Each structure stands twice: as C-alpha cells, then as structure tokens.
Amino acid sequence: MVLAVWLGSSASAQPTLIFSESFETAGAPSISPQWVWSGNAPTVVPDCDGGWGIRKEVPLPGETNVPEQPRRWLFHPLPHDPLVNYNVTVRAVVSEGISSAPTFVHATICWFKVSTGAPVGWNGNFATSASEFCDPFVGGIATPAPVGDPSAQFGVLLYGERSPVISTGHYDLAEVRVDAYERRAMFTGSVLLGGAFDPTTQRMTATLNQQGLVPLTEPYTALGHPQVGGGGGETTTAAVLNTNYPAGRVVDWVRLELRSFSDPSNLVATRQALVLQNGSIVSTTGQFGILFNVLHGNYYVAVRHRNHLGAMTSTPITVPFPGGGVWNYTFATPGFQCYGTTPRNIQGSIAMLWPGNALLDDEVKYAGGANDRDRVLQAIGGAIPTNTVSGQYRQEDINLDGLVKYAGAANDRDLILQTIGGAVPTAVRVEQVP
Image (spheres, rainbow, N blue to C red):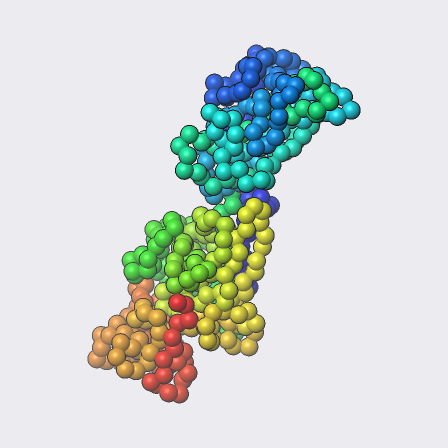
C-alpha cells in the first residue's frame, strides 16, 4: 500500500496542444497575424509535402548569430502557465545554402523581448534543435520564470543559423506546434484508518457508506481545517459512493496536505479525497490520482482523517523540474519512516492512523480536561452510558460504523483507551504532524 507522486511527461500525463500552425488554410498559404520577425518578411513557398509554407532568411554575411542574440527570427506570443512544461515541434527544411557545413533551424520556448531581438533572463542554457529535412524535430522543453520586464513576452521562437562558410541561406517552415505537459504533482496511494480496520479481513469496513452517511461534500472545511493551494469544497457523487471497486467501496473522506520543506508546519496545498476499503486513495470521481498545482521543489506530505491522528512523511519529497519520477510512500507499511515518535499504530505487517480524535485537536485523551472520551458520552446524551446515537455522520463515531456507542461491544470509548496505551487512563497520544 503506497502513496506515490509522479510529474512531467510520464505515461500518466498526456500533452495538451496549445498552439499549432501549418502556414496553410484551405489549400492557400497563410501566416497568422500574431507572428513578428526580424529582417525581411517571410515569403510564401511550397513546403516539402507539397503544401504551402513560408521561407525565412538566415543572417547575412558578417552578422553574428548566437542564442543570446538570434538573428532573422520569428516569434509568436503564447499564454504562459508556470505549472507546465512546453514542447515545440517543427517541420522545416533548409532550402538554400547547403554545403559541407549546413544551415540550422532552431526552435525553443522562452521569454523574448521583441524590441531587442533577444531572450530575457538568459541563463546560458538555451534549448535548440536542428534539421535539414522535412521530418519533425523537437525543440527544447523550457518554462522560464516570469520576468519583471513588461516588454518581455512568452512564446515560441524560431530562427536560422548559418555556417561561417555559407554566404547566403534560408529555411522553409511547413508546420510548428506547441504542446504543454503538466508538471503538477499527482498523488496516488493508500492509508489505513485504525478505527475502521477489521483484522479478520485486513480491510476497513464501509459501514458509513453502506448506510448512506458519507456526505457528497468534503467535511474538512466545515470542521475548520484550513484550505490552501486550491483545496476545499470538493464534492463527489452518489454513483462514486455506490460503486464497489476492486479495492472496495468508499470508506470516508480523507485529507492530503503538502507542507513546506523548510517549515513543515506551513501548509502549501491541500486536497480532500476518498479512501477505499483496502486503503487506496481515489479522487472525488473515483479515479486514482489527486492533482496538486505546485511548483518544483521539496514538500512534506501529510495524510489526515477527521477523527484519527494524522501522519506525515519523515522527509520532504522532491518535485523535480523539468522531467518527472515516482516516489513511493508506504504509510501502511511499518518499515516506512514517518515524522515524529510512534506516529502510527503498527500491528504486525500493518500500520494505521491512530483513532480516537473525537474532539478534533492534535491529541487523543481519555481522562482530564478536554478529553475525547467525554465527547463520546456527551454525544449519546451525557447521562445514560448505554444510550446510542445512530444514523448520523459524527466525529464521535470513532469506529465509523454509523453508531455512537459508549458502552458494550464495539463501542467507541474503548478505541480511545487503546490509542493511549490501554493501561494508564491519564496517558495522552499526541499527533506527530507539526
């Protein structure tokens, strides 16, 4: 049972086309008006597939042509999203000036200043590619940080580069396209809730769901949990709750948090999701994978439930840029290291979140002021310990069976006592999430 994260252009992340141009419309040559260029205007020519394209010259003799100051360029502005990678693909052919040292065509995505004909914030790693034929080639993947220069624009830059031995030359462009690859963090994985765990089946019960008590809207906002980074207000459907997945039915809502690597008490992003009987965490649509809109960096991952103590990774995960990878966080495996001291309830080969947080704070208490046992007693009326409350979605229902019960078999009070150790009623179990 794992919690994993992947990013970048992996198999799970499909590219989204955000711009393309074939320089031909309905059989006639065309170039959209958003293009700007240096030197002479592009001229219309037949492209290498028999359609229409455009031709652009490379630098004149004596002109320099380096990535920091490209000459004879074409630039098209594009919308910028700081949470994606951009990939440009070009079909081009060098039409004249070929010799033993060829002319190149380059393509990249960058911040560009049209007034000076130069990239802005140049860092010495300008991504380029080259071709002498009409097969597609892929330009550099790049997502520069936004700059403070209002005259700089984000977009796709195309330009030619001549060999010093060539006096003239130009290149023909048949097609250009730009795809966006999300580099948001996508989480999948699992967590086990000790209150609902059945050691006989090695799965959690889904009694709350079977009784129709799991709400369609996440409960954590109403309980006072802060929401940041796009989280909060998630909703699901009756169809999702009624589905019996291979991993079981929905048990309840859970909460995922990303926290700052430099200060794990600082929330960066939150998401509410659903947990199935075998512990698998799914989205509100029943799909594996919960999306976080975060920039590259390092983050702690915390998992919470409304009446269990949460757990957090012992070290930050790394969200890379560019590219991606997979990191497994087995919160349900005893050998996996979580933050703090005894952050989970380990029973043999199973690790679970500690149940009993009926008061919704950062500790489980059986006795003394502000204890969780009293909350269970108050929920059933506060006077007759054999009373029960059924048919409600309540914080005091520690074992998640749809019944708040203080005494007798399968009661909620005993789980609180077990969480603090079972012997010393004044002991306290403190949550190990900063």
